[in-house]
Image (cartoon, rainbow, N blue to C red; front, top):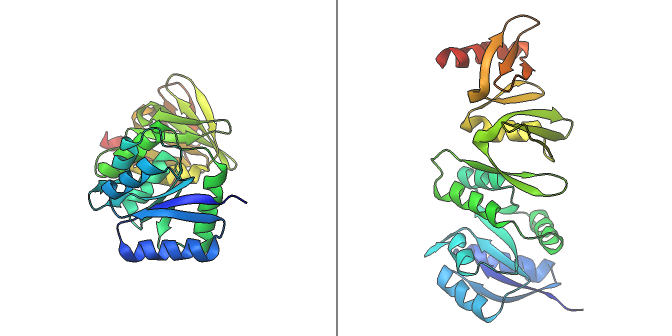
Length: 249
């Protein structure tokens, strides 16, 4: 049986040895054909042989994993991103809707990542651009987000999103051009992710982009009128927060 080949790119010596040992001891189906600690070393390896799976650390001594991907724009390897426990990096991966393993990782994390890499398609180039922007400029307001539907991945402008509505374990996104898409993650996931870029959860089932709020109507329990003429209920426990934000505008 032909083994799956892998190259490991990790600039921390101990982390590299740990990853190598975990693969050798627990994943006999994978043959490690090289490892590198820098962009330059990794580029030399990839010019000779592209593996089935590339384990890629984001922050390297002489650059980033993105620099390596720019050198090889047509790389065929499936990528498993490896990142340290950094809040900005984790948020970046969520915005880009790209899977990753977080150092220190468990054997289950590693196994799941390998299984996904072997069965899934590569991230789209636009997704990688979202990830790159989010990691390289962590203190700037992000402009794009990757959204997984059942059929495809859509990279959307955050400023075009008017509101989001819960649909059990899914979320419907409504856009200013009247489009709407069903996304395969919960509203809570997006409420946590988008709260720093101007979104407010006004109800258990509703998340709104503050800039599209037209007015607050006090009757009928209280609800928001949005610029697309939709209306969104405001829960009783959210009323005070909504009024504070509206008064600040």
